Image (cartoon, rainbow, N blue to C red):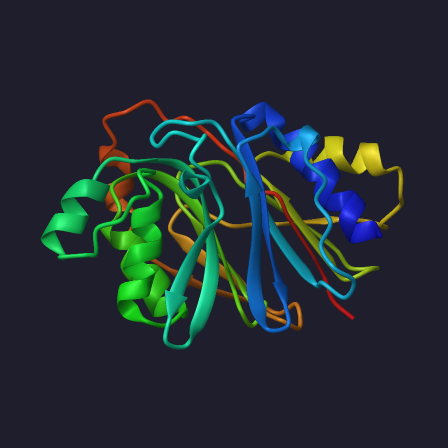
Length: 245
C-alpha cells in the first residue's frame, strides 16, 4: 500500500514537469510491465501488484512525437535476447535521426527522440554498464535516463538534466525525482514517516546502478556531446521508488 501511495504522490507532484502523458514500469514475475496513457498523472491510478519492489515512472511534456499515440509516450520497452527493459528519458536529443541512419537501426513508428536510447541498448543486446555507456556517449543533446531491467536493477545515466535521489535507511527505500522539491512535495502528501533521509550524490557523466539488494555501483561516461544541443532543454520527470528487505 505504501508503494502505491508513493508512486501516485510522486507522479502527481511531477506534473509540474509535464501533463501530456504519464506512465510507470515495474517488474512482475521476472518481466517488465509498462502502463502508460496520454493523460496527466492525477487522472490515472497507478497500482503495481503486491510484492512489487521497484517502480519507475515518467510524466511527459511533449517535444517530439504526438502524445495521443500512446507508443510515443514513456516509459518505452526494449527487447533483447537476454530479456526486456523499460526506459524513460528527461531531456531533448537532437541526433536521433542521424544515429538511426548511420548505425542502420530498424525503422520504427515511434516518433519520440528518446526512443533512440532504447535502440542503442538493444543493439548491444544486454543491459550492463558497457551498453549504457555506449548509448550515453553517442547521444547529443540533454538527458538524464533511467532504465529498469527484468531483474529489478535500475540504471540511472546522469547527463546535464536535473535529478535528485533520496535513500531512507530505516525502511530500505530509494525515491527519486527530477528535483528535490518534487520529492519533498510527494513526501508531504503521503503523510507517512519514512525516517531520516540521505541524499545520494550523482554527477553529470555518471551511471548509477541500484541492484536488487539495494547496493549502489557507479561507473562513468564521456559527457562531452551533451552540450551540443541546439534546442531548448524542456524538462520532464521520472519518479521512482524502490524498497528492499
